[in-house]
Image: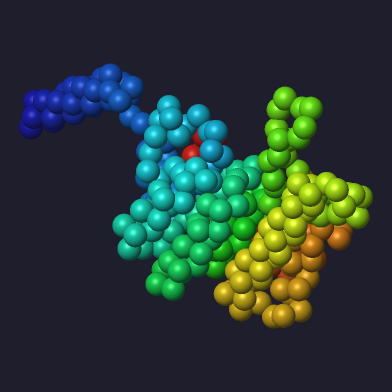
Length: 265
């Protein structure tokens, strides 16, 4: 019996050693992004999708269908069509383009007719990213997480300047009274900026109505995030301000698995 116990113990040691060596030798084959995506799926019991800036190096160096550019509405649509479970929507962006963002916003709202979306903002969800985050039926913001006003920007080729410049819709609108009647091109810029600005407000209102906020709360949210009367384009709103002043249904919940995932992006 003693000999048998010794043999079993020795065998277990050998097996454990072999397993350790195999894991060490194959560690290089483990995709860290996929590993942490799987950990998020397991922890949060849903399908994790991460929205990142279009210039994020991970999109080319380590592509994964669950890591999507803020401007890639086609890839988001594919994920929504193939997913038959709740979604963990992680937002980590500085902003994006208006047209793709409108499609993504409406697609997320449509998806929620059958499944739930929980939005996570570990650090930043600016401009277009803010609107996507607000699509979630539950919004979780990290200790150092922020959102910003929703304000479309325009790119213009200005005479006598080599590089194009970007201005927010609200700033262009403010130039309206300063432009002479002969500056037809600039007047068209102002006209287009007004259309963009109104579209931003309407889409934000639509998202808030979808979540059944009262008219009073919706008016206040639109004033804070889209009016331009108080807060400029790059202003940031933290958890306490959002909770107390906008009355949004947000939570201070951020699993470590999401922080670990975003740290790789």
